[in-house]
Image (cartoon, rainbow, N blue to C red; front, side, top):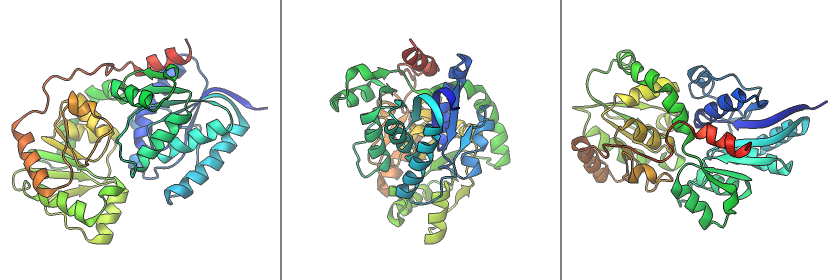
Length: 359
């Protein structure tokens, strides 16, 4: 006999866990029976398994053994494996998060089984179709039954793509639910992290993980710009496995930049909390720095989170060395924003999603 579940929540990477945690907790507090599935897309312990302790959420019911291969092979593996899970269990709804390969795989597998699909973080658009994340977002949104958008610009993007407005709901940013819940722990952890890392002066935090930035030209541009500030500031770079591998294989020179292992969610944000400046190509970090009121410079030519530029502490600066130097200097003498007030960044996004699905 098949096991019955109200919802299957599918995660695969650290940002997925951060987004799923508050929804899993809220759904279960309302006595929903949840099948919690981890695709295994992220293998690094610091980037995956530690997150469950960090966020105080239970372990997944099912962890798939997705191989560390190219995106097409990962997608194929996940589709087969999730199809098997959805066949063997009776599931009413499937929830997916963000824009990674796991998100696309779970969405396709759900619709192949004619299951109701909801997408948390719908409608974000960078307008850069070379980004696999952008292609994933568009495909997932086009087949979802409930599209939970984090901001008004995301809602507008979906309307412009002719998606039925009755499927679109502006619910707020679910990452803020997690950040708000853990914010005291994050702030209280800053001193301990600085002690552990032996950081004694002011510092920048840098993260680089997008494949488009893993070129000698882009990395050299970034590191050459950062090296202009290392006489006064420490530069801390928690390295995504993909970045570490590229730096080692291509003998990229780091010039007084501290390359460290990936950090847990709480420890990393404790580090960010005490920083003078963050430079990143991450999407979620643009939002987290905005909530924490820390200046952020985005090392890309576009962002799918324009609200962090309009109302937050973020600025998109591209990858030209001289421009990066200039923008770092500008950010050191001025706060990009002083008072952050963004609609529905209040920690109640999970509740709004539940009320829409089960009104």
